[in-house]
Image (cartoon, rainbow, N blue to C red; front, side):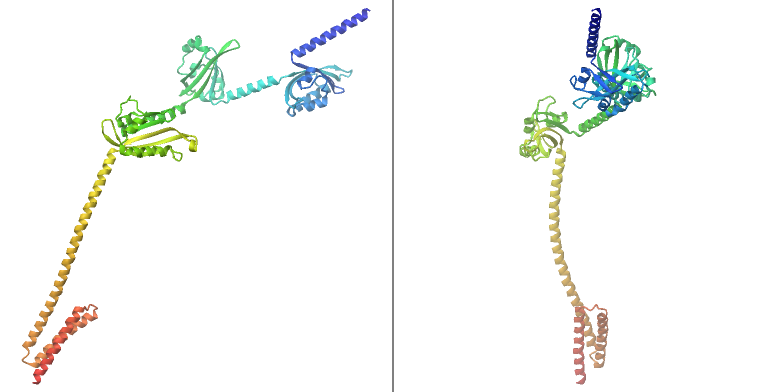
Length: 512
């Protein structure tokens, strides 16, 4: 009886211990396995099977098919560890590897095992161990690693400071921006790199409420070589592990500051150019139906600086003779086929009655396409061109006056040309008359000479022959030189006829 009672008590204690072990495994989210190293067969707990998506008793594991479930990237290490335990070169192990579940996904497992029995020759017989699903922990570690990598390789400088203002961590960009190695930088304090912060000022702020808050401001940093550059810092303080830390994201804004200064200079030049040139600017927000008129434009239109003015006020300014054309130009600009570019020259009549010419140019941006397109914003400039228009009008009048003068002068020249032609005709006729007169005078001289010699027929004949011979020689020279004219031919024929007539008369008289 006593023996039976002791056996029952031992069995009860064993069951209690097993139950406590099971509860401990459940509480620790642990699975249990018992591997027979001789046969390769493994007994696994329901928790072990549940980690892989199986119910108790559904999964049969052996050393071989267990290894097939291990992720290919982890299989070499896991297989080598198992074989070392079988060979007796390893008595315990701790591994992290991935096992494939029933659904095909991979779960990270932490396995801890120990050889608990050997035969008489010291060969291992039994391996006991636990499995823990550490997938969540691995995911957290992976995210932590990614976060750490992103911090280390961030384009902004990142600093961690303790309550005393000393650097406890700095990423790669922080070291590069300041020119220090990480070891050098972690021996410094904030006021060593920030010329606008003092040790006393830091301690005062660290003891006040600012330490637990956040701050975003522009400041300066000093490099190892002493050069100063502008930065923008965003900082915050947090409590962790019973200590207070400050961390800051710092961005080098040197390029941005230079760009901002360039933009400011450009804007200032533009303002000066607008002021000097008198260009007026308008900006129409079509959705809000509001319009901005620059001071220069208000002055051009004769409006006060603070007077509320609308589109209707502008339309009323346009000269009645130009209003329809301006509105049509605006309509075309905003139409479905318009390109958004607007340009018009028109007259305005300000409240004082002064009429001015202006040139307006603008560009409209749209939302939507085609027939549903709606204007969003029109920005443009207006320039007074009254002086130009007056100059153009003066030039037009000067051109008209010049054209009239040219016309009158042309008419005068035409009249003078007609008179000149008439004078030339008169001179030509007088010249011809003079030539004929000279010919007659020459012939008279010949007749007089002949008459003088009439007393002697032989002398008369000799004189006529000599004269005719002389004229014939001159006539031949003209003919050979290709300068014989019709007038010279007529003169020669007339002289020859007279000589012939005179010779005949002389001969008759001699015979009688």
